[in-house]
Each structure stands twice: as structure tokens, then as C-alpha cells.
Length: 146
Picture 1 (tube, rainbow, N blue to C red):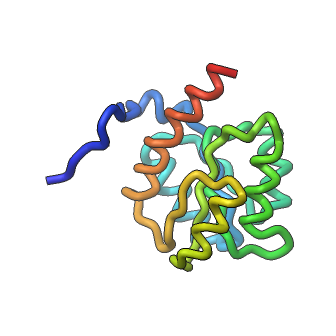
Picture 2 (picture 1 turned 30 degrees about the horizontal axis):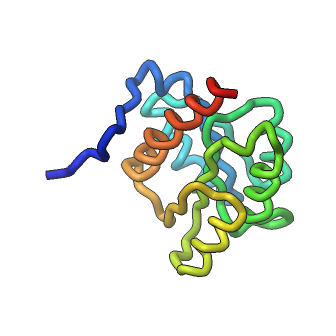
């Protein structure tokens, strides 16, 4: 028997259809898997191959939630997260780190640059959508307050 988190309302499929989720990963396989999982639940999906590609798209697309891989060429996930969180417009946008590493140091470093959560790859559709449920509602609430 699974237990729901207290005081957490699930977003309906209509609400999910208004959620823009960005996935930043240099692996085409990971990007496509995440895209399939997220689109099947109704989310709008924006894909980026690396941090530089993502930064340009973030300012145009204004995602509600961002998943970012840690190990990427040119601009890694830590640097990308730090740049996103330093921008006043996006500092409240939830950023979730994705990594195949599950070490305490990696998690702590993610927190230090402002990430909201850390998911280990390979992720499942369930873990991805659970993060969307938690953080998309929070992101919408933050945007309404701004």
C-alpha cells in the first residue's frame, strides 16, 4: 500500500497539459525516454542537448520545471543549474538534477548550486512524473506570487 504525501494535491491531466518541462541531457536516449514519459502524461516537453542550448531555450520557452543531467560537455549540469538559479526571473523555477552517480558528494554539490531534487538514472516514468507533480504545482504557485 502506497502512502500519499500529506497536503499534496495531484495535478489533473488538464493541469499537466499546461506544464512545460525542459529536459537537458546530452544523451539522445535519455532525452527521448523522458519526452515519451512526460508527453504520455500530457506535459509539454522542451528538449536541450546541453547547458548552452538550454539557456537560450529557457529564455524563450519559460519552462515550469527543468531536469538537467550533471555530466555534459561544455557546460555541465552544476554550472547550468547555478546559472539558472542566479537569474532573478528563474530562481524559483524547480531544477532537478539527473545523474547515474548516487553519491553523497554529488547530491550535496547539487544542493549547493540550487537544485531542488536529485534523481538517479535510469529513472522510471513513475519517478519522473512524481517529481513533476511535486514541483510543477510549486512552480505555478511561485509564478502566481511574482
